[in-house]
Amino acid sequence: MTTDTLNTAPPALVPEEDAIFLDFDGTLVDIALRPDAVQVPEGLAEMLMDLHAMCGGALALVSGRAMGELAGFLPRFTGPLIGSHGAESRGLDLPGASHSVDLAALHARFAEFAAANGLLAEPKPHGAAIHFRSRPEAEAMARAFASEMISLHPGLTLQPAKMAFELRPEGATKDTALRLVADAAPFAGRRPVYLGDDTTDEPALIWAQELGGIGVKVGEGASAARWRLASPDAVRAWLAAATET
Image: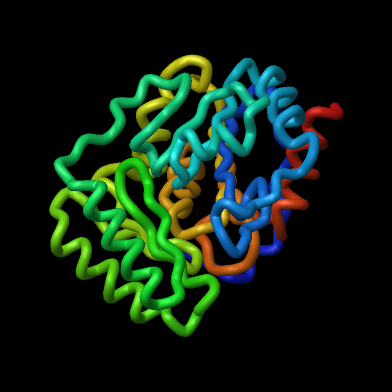
């Protein structure tokens, strides 16, 4: 069940008992016009490392971004990373993704379409995305293009996102990745806590709550989450409060 009227802030974190999983764009940092233009607030990595230590290493970032790109934004965060919706990872025993897609050709086609239509193409290690944030009126066109590309590339699936459509490997989802790591050290036996802002995060929010944990929707919009924080600023303040106890 989803709702767009949630306004309840989540309960305080208990680092000694929680396993914390955090989306990046729109959750820890504000979304920018271009994926490469996000601004990482000063001290974010250090705060995450403090919280990582307090919860015995049971804190991971979970993103649709390529893992290398995510690591590049937070070079001083050395904890676990899950990138490309679970197709890549660092510091975790995840199988990754395999497919036979000609990525060079796929990326070239996305770039060609984006240049011809004033949109932004984002090549990814296991797929590609087309962003229409600069031209919201182009949503239907972008969707039609992404759907056409799916029909031409078996093994990939269409993933709607905020002002974008992405092609990702079938089976590579955030909740699938979390189900694989949740029973392994250092996450096993802890209350799962997941924060996310997008449709790609909804299955992971549901997963955390089904296990008796906390699902937190960030920003506006309908969600299955039982709790909500208004913005990345509010998320960072909520996380920082746990490091000050």
